[in-house]
Image 1 (tube, chains in turn blue, red):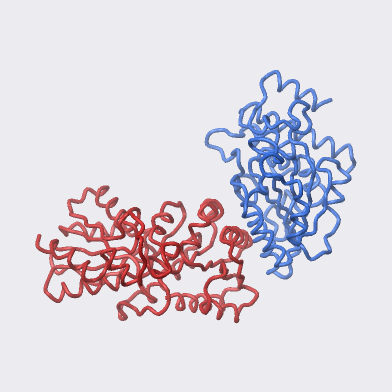
Image 2 (cartoon, one colour):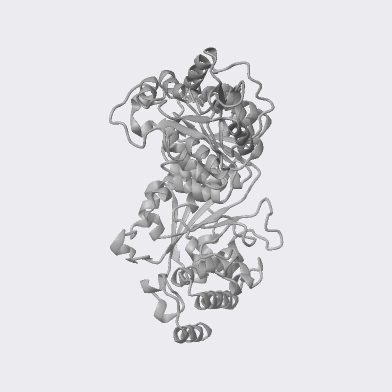
Length: 270
Length: 311
């Protein structure tokens, strides 16, 4: 994919996220903006998926473990042709399944229900194990988690098991923005040595920018010949793309006012 | 009971390539036979129950039929929220086998006892809750779990129990049905409902009363959810008293189920709930001893029924 297309898609996605959250005041906008480039790289460069055959037996599987970034997942599924923009227009509407935390089956391509942290990796590990049991499967599993999410003990239970079972078909991506609900991760439970932790647990670890196209696609796309689970620590900026949202913990829960919406839109379009 | 169940799963696994058995490092001398025969379909996940549930969910999403084996409190309480979100919310085909139900591991102390499990599991949408009385019933409920699919919790006792009654016909029993052991001989009288392996005590109490000519019925309830409400209403309609027996807190299990049915169906009947009082014991003991302390020995059950017979 040409670099301009990559940029264009990222802008489209951020605009849809902004639109849905501005309209409903149902936020986590910072968490959504943080992972946009990771999603574009996965959905357009890395994963073996087909919007016209979403139940394909051999498809790769994306698990959004940080389920509160739901709107980012809706927006990438729109962008990659899995569904139309209804999910953006009806986000958080009464009676729909377009929730603030994703629901499996609500639209094609949403593989699990998530929203409670520390659940995605154990499930991803089970899926990776399932693919290993089915010996002819070359399915890959991609699990996206937050750095704050790594506070959860279940993350480490799953990591130990995935290493023990040599699940090299599992890629764990950490959206490392050093922010969590109540403040900077560094001030709450520091994950500054997260790469060392995963290495010590026996994973293959790569560190990359979470927004740079070349770096991201290289880190995610290069094959893993290690017979260990692959961990990609993607350094990201929470609220990326809108100056006043960047690196501010407020935008974990906050939604933009009319004025902020206009300014954000202007910045995204510039 | 646990060995019978594992034997049954082995038999099913021979026919169905998708069956997987996972333990969280428990089941020494129980699960090895499965592992020997199906080394690629057996996993010891380690002492990590949260991960056990998540991995089971991932396997179920891959089309596998997963059985989990652990001691009941660890199998469902440590990882309750994983069961809620990963299994029940997503309605996945995973069967949890919780051994050591009630006071089966009484001398191990409260950490290893499960007297709140049925209530906890019963609150979860999609979850089927089963509590067989003996090896015969255990095989029957697990058959139903396999056929029905979706999440199930099956509370087992431990090893070495005998069948309470050996000549019962289980083949016609459907999901939710009761097992009739003694029928009331005429209108009025007392109906006893028992859930789980405490049936052995309830059966001794009921047999004694039947021998003495009392108008007493006894039903075993291996399914707590779903439960055949129509059948229960049918039985209760012509009785003056009902008594429930469970090795479980009186909050939220069989006794509560019965109270809900009686209230909602407007039945004019006296209800006595026998079960474990709402407290932790500050002592330990064998299953028989703990049952007796909880008022659940055959003799103590009988003493509670006798005044009802005089009505």
